[in-house]
Length: 117
Image (cartoon, rainbow, N blue to C red; front, side):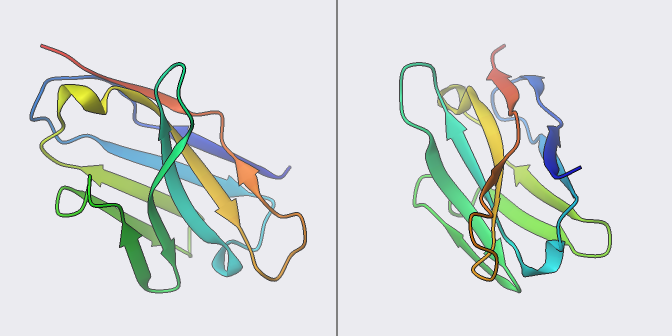
């Protein structure tokens, strides 16, 4: 079954450092660019971190605090978030797309992260 499944969300205190995980199944993981998006209710989903091969990219809002990584042996992509702020309360989504596979874009169902004391 082709799917992405996120985990690791929940309630986090301000300044906390949660790690999100996403496991991919049913795809040739190594040829996919993986990404993390976030979305707050009523707003568009926002891309903030991508990884393909060995290169990563981040938006300025998370650069230096968040780290995206992947393990091609286990079909996993991770998001380490450090010094999480209350405005980081969002639903976080895993995304996969491959330039080699037409119509390959995949989304996970998302995991809620709530930053609150």
